[in-house]
Image (cartoon, rainbow, N blue to C red; front, side, top):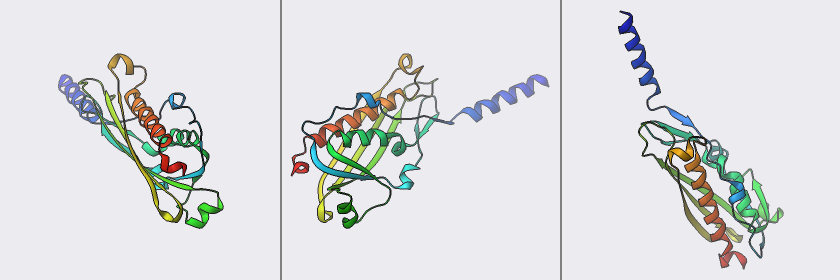
Length: 196
């Protein structure tokens, strides 16, 4: 009887653990994000992330049948700020979606609204951290008169093996975030329309 109860308990533990979503943080390596552009774009920029997006938790596949969960907008915001500050003369975080008058009053020439999409996967059968991760950043840049000045889309990719991530579980995700933000940094810096 005891053996049967032990088996039932063990089976229940396996079922409870299978498919659980492990929390991770996908913030980039801030120190590895590009240096300021030379010269800076001499314009002020504001970025807007809604409260709903800041609170958005995403769940994607990990390894071993498990999943991972994280907050993409919250985790990438500091990196996004650094990218913008490295390209523009001033950056403002906007709590509310502004109108043209509000932008002008704050000295903002461009409004950026980022959209972040993520995917993950793993070739590991017995470990849950992802071995591959992608971050897609889609930024619409609006200028005076609510006209679209630029639409920049980049995809960052990151990978990590077990020997690498065993002490840093979200390593593939961090690499993808860093890659995406560096690509965004580069695309903004060379976009001539933003300098006019």
